[in-house]
Image (cartoon, rainbow, N blue to C red; front, side):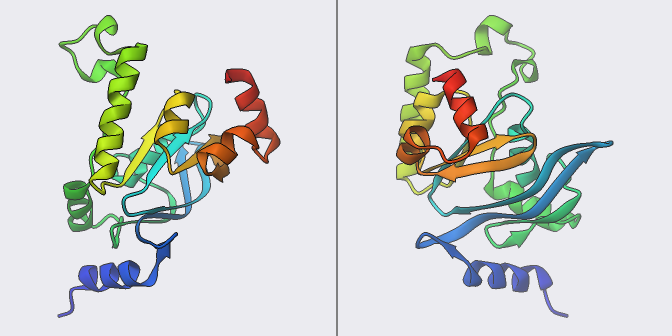
Length: 196
């Protein structure tokens, strides 16, 4: 009997690279619905090994749903998600393999009942700096990072690429300097003009 999991893993791992890096995360045509509400629409995203990708956008744009789908905290309805060569399906073996290699730090303070709102809400400037240092240290070890944030300074300094999401779609992708100084899409320009 053939182990189709390892065969699939090898096909994906060997077949695809991004910017000279091995492909670590790929989302291809991913849709996610909550009832009739479409939270993610036709998401196509590739993240190379060791890359730091920062996802920004207004509240409700699908950022958290996107990263929750990557380690199957949310089930995607259509499309394919592959993490380190393993396709995320309903096969619990694949889910276990992916969760062994991925982690997620949540933003909601209510996940930690021993903390108050004052303890885990918005980071002050010193904490932002400390978190940025940790992210940069992790990226120097070769760890692949997908970070969702509302902190534009953080995104500008930490990211190899920035992804802007709105209304469940990826609207624009670019390197930080180009993204923040010369966004191409009108929706991106509007968002940045309101927060910068």
